[in-house]
Structures are given as C-alpha cells and as structure tokens.
Amino acid sequence: MPTNAQRKASSKSNAAKGCPVRQLTVFLQNRVGALMSLVKLLADHHVAVLGLSLQDNTELAIVRLIVSAPDDAHLLFIEKGIAHSIIPVTVIELQETETSLPQALSTLLGAEINIAFSYPLLIRPGQNAVLVLHLDAADFGEEVLTKSGFKVLRQEDLSR
Image (cartoon, rainbow, N blue to C red; front, side, top):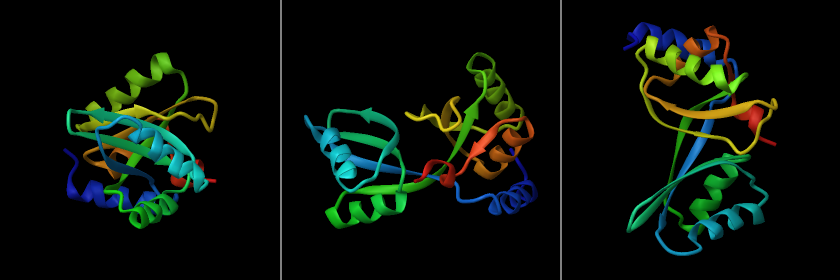
C-alpha cells in the first residue's frame, strides 16, 4: 500500500492538471424502462452519457454513469429526487488494447493498488480505448499510471 507521504505528494501533483472525472452512481428500482427513462431525462437536459455500467439484482439496479456535465446531472437528480452519489474515478486511455490493458493492470499490481470496479467508456476522445477505474488509492494510482506512460484523462477532456 502507498504511504501517506506518497499519497499527499501525488495529490499535490495532480491538483494542477484539472478536475478528476466524476462518476454518478444512481440507484434505480428494478423495473422495465427505468434505465431508458434515466438516460432520456439526461438527454432532454443536454447531458450526454459517455460511459455506463449496470449492476442489477432483484430489487435494485445500480447504474454507474460518466456524463458530459456531472454538475448539471447532479442538480437535475436533486431536483427530480433521484437517489445518487458522486465519486472521483480514474480514466485512462489505452494505446494498444492487446498490450495496454495487461500493462496497466501490472502497473497497478506493482504499486499494490486495488481496483474496486472497472468499465469502458462509450466514447474515445483520442480514438483509443478508454477505461474507467475505481482505485483504492486514486491519486497514487494516477501517478504510477502516468509514469508508466498512460494518459490519465480529466473531466475537462470529456466534458463539453
């Protein structure tokens, strides 16, 4: 695990690079059309869904979203009474998918950083595959990935 000193130094170096990508997690009732209604609500308010992950069970669906305007989506969800949370995530661009993914995972393993969940984005800002990672040490993870040659995307890279 990274030391506190490593995490603090990493946090300071990333502060000047822009805002981290923010993921909205929405809790939906497990019923037909709930996801479509959520996506349509965002589209009607000019918020594009850039990435999506769905975890479904019998009572509830957990929808993880990366959107073009997270602040607008957050305010919209508050206005509509939609239960949600916001967390920062690490988003990296994979240059050559066949070798980049194993290299990224190896880099994180070498730094003893755990991945809680991961999913791809629907868009490719740099025409390469893009991967969302929720890391237990995000700032340190971004630092080691950057040092290994990965491009870490910021919210400004994805927003309109």
